[in-house]
Image (cartoon, rainbow, N blue to C red):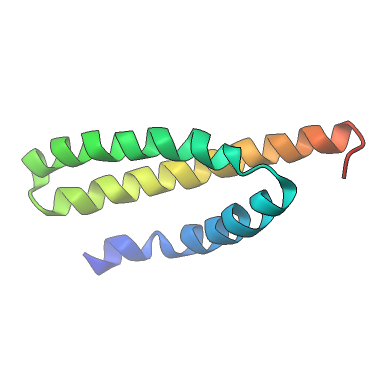
Length: 91
């Protein structure tokens, strides 16, 4: 079980730094909402599905999938947001 959760450590550290410090400081914290609401809903659906298939380990699998999805999606959206700001001359 811990081996599965260890996969999340680098992503969670990076996401915590970017999500909590940089997005709030730049006024882009709304991007978190656009990513976390679908990820939370997907987590509930995958929990129900994976519990039927894998038992209690299904909760861990669903959490890993949803956290990876939300971290990657957030980084991509935030990258394009910052890229667009740089093209407009706003730093």
